[in-house]
Length: 120
Image 1 (tube, helix red, strand yellow):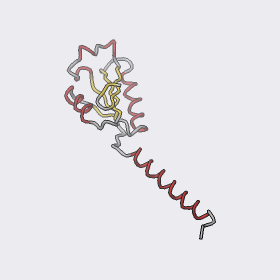
Image 2: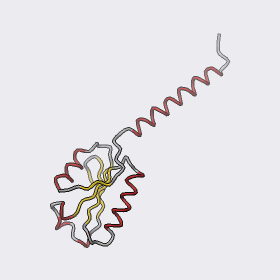
Image 3: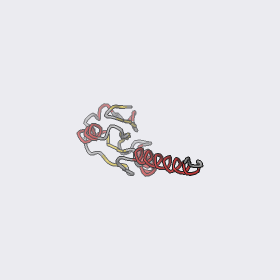
């Protein structure tokens, strides 16, 4: 005996709903951050970039105290980190990078974006 179609449609809808939930869980799976973290050294900076999951986007703010715009950008990134908790937001003083000569005050603030260990 063949069903009248209603039961088949109900099963199909349940299957679609389950597939959508599974897909949502896969897409939202991963580390959650939600804050702007301070990197203390060039070594910690490199370690963060190299050891993070390949699918995680990392945004690094290179700043220095007393530079116009750096404080404002830190405040903005703090807010964005809460809103986009799957993105890793970090900051590091140019003088702590070990390459401070490459980050002179005229190029600060600098924002770098990494994914999969590569500069995007």
